[in-house]
Image (tube, rainbow, N blue to C red; front, top):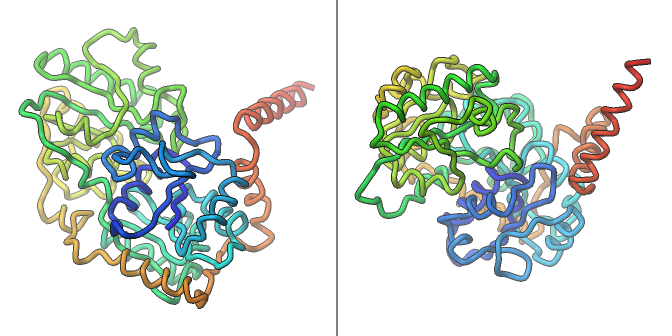
Length: 407
């Protein structure tokens, strides 16, 4: 299996899925160059705790971290590797252009597998459309399987033969925890790039964390960042927490850190987030947690799935250090299903066998029409043009627009 990732969160997901595969499967992990490609430190954090991280990487020629390759070099690497299955662990537009154009005519044709790297409730048509050119769509709870299967049945696309469709897998990074230190003295706030959106809302979170740090000097209050302000993430973060903290004078005992989440959780006495898949990692690690509801509980806040979990709370609860233990029934219904229910490996075996025999019927993408051609060209441009050149182009375009508007 060849796995291709384009950002920090998808790379973490891909490394975890490869780690969960049988040890005798031959696998390769690569990063496609794009404006959101992870930095070296983000790559190290993403593969930490997996076989790839322990072995020092998996890439062209072996050794080192997974390499970041331009689209053409990625294509040549795929031709040399001749995979039976390609895992497209990428954002939607990148999955679409890789499956439909850049890797489309590999021979023998591999099966394409994609999916989503975290909480995907509620399921969206947009996520399905971008991945409808893949034979298999991997998600992580029974609810997600049902919702995406319903979307697939209504819209079409995706795989329909040889095990195609929607498959269930346990979130791979729920099992990365190592030995637990004797002392748990850390409170972890896991950031989410998209929510809350408003600067003022993010500042209230920082103030509550500062209040907790002031009231509990025995606790190490940490804002766990996906990346520093200069690093890119899967989603753009308009109001970066560390930048906000510095603008607020940056005084107090709150500190900011990057690195693997499972290492931070090993020292955690409590965990808090507005919305982050890391909440599930905290549950798996046995860390009491708090899902902030002050900004709403909705699909827009990406925290709807936590209704009924027993983990919702407020900024006042955070300032007082009051954390929750999740409801067991909710856990079993959401992401902590029995391993026997996961069918993704069996489905991939079937697809690999069909691909090896040359009998795989390619999935039909719903974005192949002329009305989607321009968007696909833009997505391909982001993979083929160096990010620095793209930034120059975007800046020049904005300047021209401002000039024309001023005329």
